[in-house]
Structure formats: structure tokens, C-alpha cells
Image 1 (cartoon, rainbow, N blue to C red):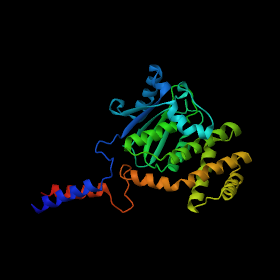
Image 2 (image 1 turned 90 degrees about the horizontal axis):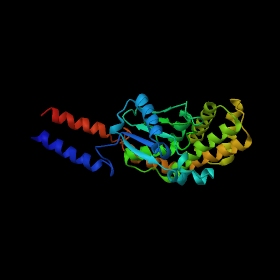
Image 3 (image 1 turned 135 degrees about the vertical axis):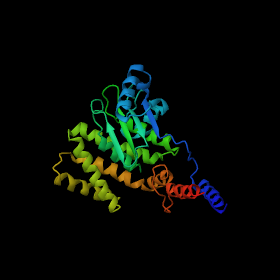
Image 4 (image 1 turned 45 degrees about the vertical axis):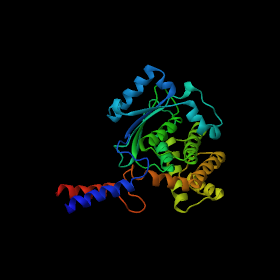
Length: 286
């Protein structure tokens, strides 16, 4: 009887500790379709076939959402100065949080022409996202820039936690800046992505927020790795990385909100999985 009482009390503790918005029925697989893709049955079929073959999931049991031009423009207009129309939103993404030991992004290189898997990973980590397997494709060739809005929307749907707008803007700006440099300078996308990642790590380690200091760090990496980009590119990269640094408070808040969904312990050291296993040990012993 005493074991049963302790187990019941422990379950009450769990209920009190689980954050608001957490549900036992987490949407661990979420698909986001660009609205132009969703509106065309052939396009949608092409995208669905890619997801099924690559992710090996049942799309019928996955939650699906449509990413509209207004969704993309809400974030991108102030960054790119562009306004996208409905027929331009083609990129689509699938998030599988069941496969969440690390963050991994698989890109359909036959359709996504500019944004690489490493670029998505870098931008998502800037947003505080470190878990899950993401798949990105399009029914026709596309840059892949609009897919980031869908990916972040997928994480919101899967965890029922909104990503702060400032964080979305910083991640989107990072993707756009790299895409623009690749397009204008012809620099190798993988080399540029590694450069950005290395600079971000150094800037984060030393908590650098000064623009000129970030420019000097980028210049050092550019020269060391013999990467041919312009001074304007370097300034734009510095602006983007500086923006990422300036939203770290919002990033840390978001990470705290989704820590249980991502399978990590909270700041207090509390582990939901550990506590549930402890309760099971009592029940199994009854």
C-alpha cells in the first residue's frame, strides 16, 4: 500500500512539473507544404513521395500545415525587401521528432538549389533548435529559403510552443544572407556555411556583440580559408551574426520552454524520462 501511495504522489508531482501546453499526444511528425505545392495535386504527390521514401513515415498519421505567402512575408519582407506571391511558395518540409538524438537535415538537392542542409542546421541552431530530423524538398526547383518558415512552423506545431518572432527573424536573416552571398559571389555553399558556423561559435564563446570585432573575426576566417567574398558580403554576415547574438535571451527562453519535448533535462536538472522510469520501478515492484 505504501508503494502505491508513493507512486500516486509521484504522478501528481509529474502533473505539476509538466509545462503548460505539454500534451501526451505530441505531434512528433509534422509536414508543412508550400501553398503552391498543396494547391497542385501533382506537386503534392511528388513531395509526398519524397517524404515517404526518405523519412519512412506514414503521412496519413502526420499533422500537416500549409505555409502561405503571408506566413513567409511576415518574416521575410523586412529582411529581404521582397514580397512573395502565393504561387512562389513551393518548398515543403517534414519534421520527425521521433528521430531526435541530434539535429539532422536532409535536403533534396535535385530540387533545392541554394540552401544546403548545413545552412538549415546553422539557422535552426541559432533559433535554439538542436533535435529532430528535417527533410526538405520542392516539386520544382526552388532556392529553399521559404522552407525555413515551414520548418520553424513544424517545430511549433510539434511542441505547441511558439518561437519568438525576434528569433525567427534572426534565423531567416541568416539563411537569406548566405543565399544572397552564394548567388552574388559564387562562393561554395558548404564552405560559406562552415565559415558562418565557425564564426558563430567563436562569437558565442566570447559573447561578442561589437560589430567591428565580428567583422575582424570574419576577415580572419576568410583569409585563413581562402574564401573569396566581398567586403559588402562580410559586412552583411557581421550584421546577421550580430543579430543572432542580440536575441540570445529570447533563444534561451525558447530552449527552456521546449527542453522536455526535445528530450533534454531542464535547467534544474529535472528529467521527465528519469522520473517516469523511477515511478515505473515502483509499479513493477507491486
